[in-house]
Structures are given as structure tokens and as C-alpha cells.
Image (cartoon, rainbow, N blue to C red; front, side, top):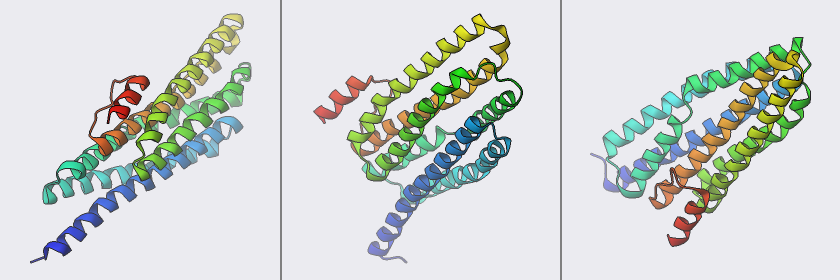
Length: 237
């Protein structure tokens, strides 16, 4: 029979393994997104395929994490902060389902195909790098905030998602103008819309994870709150 101290050490190791695995998966996703953005910018089908192929390892990690979470809940019956950490982690993992990631990468591949054959709508692409870099920066900061359970950083990420949304809408307006002025741009512009929307969703996922960071740390559910409401709730806490 395990001693109490040994059992607690084992429990702490299991919680740390979950946290470490989440950060590892997040790093792989960040690398995958950067590869997809490079494929977009360069019109490189090989890079696009690399981003798609990398999704298999991310999916495998997602399944492993699901099993780890189930195992800890079933055997350890966590309470209080530990339970919030496990539930928040499970919800964060669930926000990145495999079919969504694959759909986003397929959109990037279709956009690359369009770039190979049609260059009439190249002008809006100059806006994509800014959107992509902001979204990737949000993802990186979210992983850092998760590693430290930094609620102030998480609140800033929630607020920054509005900037990603605003940039996406600006790109959409510009593309609509291009399509109205030159019907030859319609097909490529629609591909760019899909790619930009996939990038905008990265910001949404980062925001959702930031909300779960606050839930894990303080036990407050920040979903559906405005950024100002989040700041006021944290100030009261």
C-alpha cells in the first residue's frame, strides 16, 4: 500500500504531466500555424502539406491528454483548485478539435492553390501578415500565461482579441471592394476570406484559453464577459 506522502507526490507528478503535455501540444500548434502562414505567404504547397501532416501529432496528443484527465479524475477525485485546473485544461483542449484544425489547414491549402493560378487579388494579402502575426503572438502569450497561471496576462489576451476581429473585418471590407471592382478577383478573394477567417479563429481560441486560465486560477467563469467586465471582476478578486 502506498504511503500518503508517496501517493501525494505521485498525484502532483500526474498534474504536472498534464500541464506539461498541454504546453507541449500548444508549442506544436504554434509551429503548425507558423508553417501554414509561411505557406500562405510563399505560395508553397509543400509547406502547406507539412502543416496539414503535423496535425496528426497534435490529434494524438489531444487523445493522450483526454485519457490523462479521465485517469486523474477517476483515481484521485480532485477537489478545489486541482479540480478547476483539470476541468479548465479539459475545456481548453476541447476548444481545438481535430476537424477544426484540419479544416483551417485545408483552407490554407486551397488559398495556396489559388495563388498559384490567379494573382488578381494579391493586394489584400499585405494585410494578412499583420493579422497572422497578431494571432500567433496571442497564442504564444496564452501558452506563457498558462504556464504561470498569470491572470493579468490572460485578461490582456482577452482584450486583444477585439483587435484581431477588427483586422479581419477590415480585410473583409477590402476584399468586398476588390470583388465589386473586378469580378476576376472573386474566386481568389473568397479563398483569402476563408484563410483570414481561420486565422481569426486562432485569436478566438487563444481568448477562450485565457478565460480558462482565469477560471483555473481564481474560480471565476469569464465566458461571455466583455473585456471591461473581466478587468472589473479581477479587480474585485
